Amino acid sequence: MAKLASVLVVDDNPNCLQFMTLAFATQAGVQVTGEQKPRTALVRIRNERPDLVVLDVKMPELDGFGVLSALRGEGNPVPVVMCSGSALQKDVDRAYGTGCNGYIEKPSTLAEYREMAQTVIGYWQRTELPQH
Image (tube, rainbow, N blue to C red; front, side):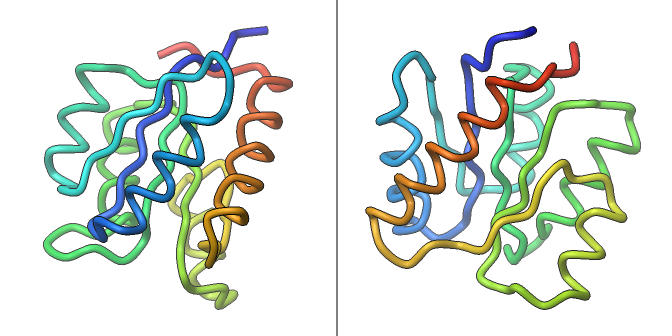
């Protein structure tokens, strides 16, 4: 089983990015970094090869679906968990149809962000991660 050691959080909202980064940083042994710009995130994913990407859905210029499509289109198997304020079934279906590995609704408090991060990290530490 591969160990989850690095997480890249991508969100254009600086407050959400800060909460998400703080939440994942509380998980022992996991290095977390954040990125606000989706196009820069694509480059970072290709170069840094994080073990997991937590990706916002609604972003300007290039949304999370576009980022995920680009990754999957080039054969990049990095696990991606989409994180959105939308729980609409059409968004969930589109995310999975595009190739995400998980879909979660954005929490509203720092405590909920921490709980979400713990759940995501726990899941991926028990799962065989793709080698990329």
